[in-house]
Length: 87
Image 1 (spheres, one colour):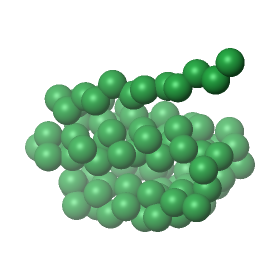
Image 2 (spheres, rainbow, N blue to C red; image 1 turned 180 degrees about the vertical axis):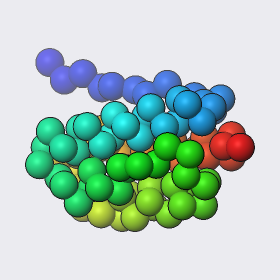
Image 3 (spheres, rainbow, N blue to C red; image 1 turned 90 degrees about the horizontal axis):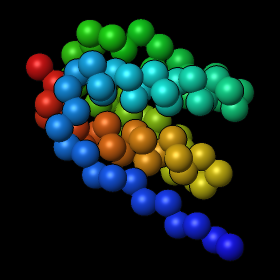
């Protein structure tokens, strides 16, 4: 049986929640031996929005042809939607 997982669209994440999601991506990348991807999300705490946004874009480009990592892509897209909430 095939299960379609749907991500709940959340648009009210604050900085703490955004940084926690990026930490999830970092940990997942490390667990899958994707050191280059993990490094993009090391030390993002307190980073300006523009820098976080650029790292997310770079990561999404890197993941674009890697469907086996679509969970991380989806999480990054969720964070990207919430970037306007960073203050």
